[in-house]
Image (cartoon, rainbow, N blue to C red):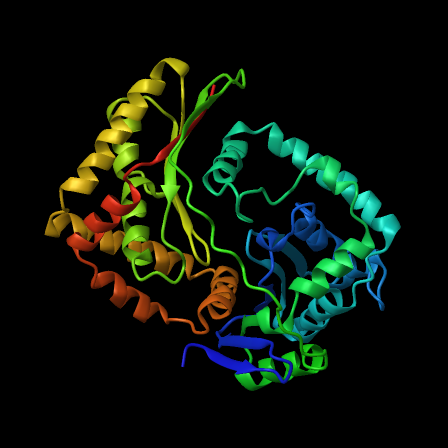
Amino acid sequence: MEFYTYTLPNGIRGIHRQVRGSVAHCALVIGAGSRDEHPGQYGLAHLTEHAFFKGTERRRAWQVNCRLENLGGELNAFTTKEDTTVHATTLRGDFAKAAELIADIAFRSTFPEREIEREKEVIADEINTYKDSPADMIYDTFEEMLFEGSELGHNILGRKAALMRYDGDAIRAFTARTHTTDRMVFSSIGNFSPGRAEAVALRYFGGHDASARGYERAVPPPVNPFEKTVTKHTHQTHCIIGGRAYGIDCPKRLPLALLVNMLGGPSANSLLNIEIREKHGLSYNIEATYTPYGDSGLAAIYFSSEHANEAQCIELIEKELHRLRTVPFTGRQLSMAKKQFIAQLAISSESNESYMLSAGKSLLTHGEVDTMEQVYAKIEALTAAQLTEAAEEVFTGMSRLIYR
């Protein structure tokens, strides 16, 4: 059995995979992110993630930060629009210490005001860094416009003016409402038995009171396609062409993922890289991405170029999208694309940490985790007609945002 799953008495679910090696990875995946913020709370989920490291009922901030580092391990966290994840890497023998520390900061953080005030300045600097990068900022601006009127329509970091208003009470109220045990998964991978993984999880996570989410996320309302150009006085043009896409539970998600990988994935032989960069030399950086959310998603193409090359890049991209909507892939093209996609997934699964995080997210979202063999089989079963259908549905009526 590739994965072992269990549920603690308070509703926290667990998943473990036993592998050879001296290193262990574990994470608490919490189904609460920036999408769960109320208006007037934007950036609070991200501040909460930072505040987790600022002291607990048992530890000062420096003790939290040194607990695993002194053992050669590491502790980290990240926030997305729908999740907050606290994860650790240690030697196998220190797995229980890592689990105890994650449980301590997830359930016993005190959010001291002095530490929070100091951390606000750190996040403000993070916001400034992001504003200095148009290649990063354009993604968030585009998503704000694409999901306007929705909780998905604001960036994760929030704005500095709002950030300065938050305090420990705001964080405590947010975590009480959103960090409920029915929306948590403890994921682990390492060279120890499933029984030991479950026993450690029960010891450190099982004693906390059960809690359940008292609200449902609202489905994003429709938004009309748009085209907008923003003057940023940048040295290059930055452009995103994209639109709404399938949610994470939609059966059409996999054909779209394969299609986007062929269109502008990480390989040098992606369709857009060959056409825009290799054949015409118009752009150093061009990529296609697909981000699924619980009930919606985003498919986008990004490129940067000299201002004079902007129009030709857009023309070539639109031409490629039209071809994908109207001309099915040949059997040979599809076979090669499947093999490439499967190989990429296989290589990425060699990272135990990434595999552990992915398994935790999958269990939280779907209630189950496919083995890699099951995923490969689903990819092999995809047809050219499914990819054409996805292209027609997602790559029609796309929006455009340009920074120049």
